[in-house]
Amino acid sequence: MWLALVALAMIGTLAYSVFWPRPIDLAERFQAGLDAVERGDWKTVRLCAHRLLQDDEHHAHAALLQAYEQLALGQSEEAFVTFSKATSEPETRELAYHEAATILYEAGQFSQTILMCRQVLEWNSARTDSQRLLAAAYYDIGAMVSAINTLKVVAEQQPNDHRPHYMEASILHDFERFDDAVLAYEEAAKRVPQDSIAKDEILLGWGECLVQLRCHAEALIAMEPASSGPEVDAQRAVALFALRQLDTALKAAESALTRRPHLPEAVAVAAQCYEHSGDVERGIALLQEAADLHPHEVELHLRLADMLGANGHLAAALDHRKKAATISEYRREFSNKQQALVHNDDDANLRFEIAQLAERLGKIEIARSWLQAAVGMATATDEIRSAWQQFQERHPPARDPDSTIVRGS
Image (cartoon, rainbow, N blue to C red; front, side, top):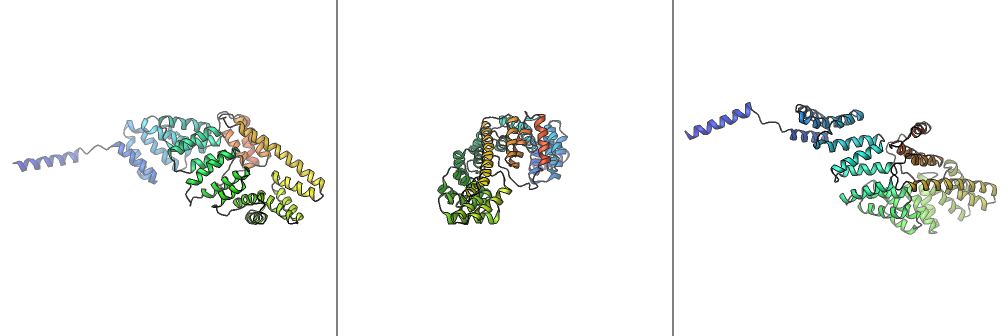
């Protein structure tokens, strides 16, 4: 009798599971959809979204999954709208806001990016990817203090990561805060993996700042682990020449010029080394050729003026001194306006003025980045937007998508 009751109970349980299956856990289905997004399994994403849409309380969850697929298909505008539909639920709004902010950032809408990232961080201050995005947006509008303060939060959250220190160093370098940049580069160098492509970039930046501070021996030590590249060799040449190690300075300069002809820093060192060895004409010819290609490089004009004057070409020397003085005045004005931006988060006109100065100095990509900063701000005017269109017509963007721009360098 007892066994019969047990068997009957088992049959009843089986029948219940067949005719009344366990309810689908929609939270599990949503998580499965997110995991599928990570894998790029869009078939599973669509299935999960379809099931979530059948429940009125999970429409926002479905919208989030659908937006990710639209984003993967390159439909950024459609994805932005769909992400906005996912902001109605606390469980999905943080992700939705962050992804929408990312779309805005990639579209150059920096002020809107900042507002949305701030909202995300009000909900979750520990969200490191939103902190990074906020720092990048601040950087792209030239808001130095706000960017660095945000990066310090990222560094605290991820103490072994070299990237926030590297970005801080780059910003300080751009704004010619070389003493502080040196410290940030040093922290980045301690943390960067030895096989990272950023390693040489960090060591080069560190060396450049030390050269600017006339700490030439320290610059050579900092750059010693870096691979031999034209920019690194050029900075080594400058430091070695300042330390009066002329033979090794010339070797470093010529090594740089072999791979990057007319690199201004290397040309200036090589020309002066030729002058010291008595081959003044060779130095002048090298400088003149480089100055024709880089007419806005003040160091080339100064060296030409010195060598032409010493060689008796007084009129030509005076002409190059005048050019150097004009360029130096533009550079001073450019630097002063950058310093005015240190605590400035919202003046699009000032960024526009900096862009105009950069274009006068022949720094086209730097001008492009400052104009993009101005256009991406809430205070951008019709004049700025029109100037941006005209600038793009004068200077179509470079085709290389991997090229990096460092403002102020």
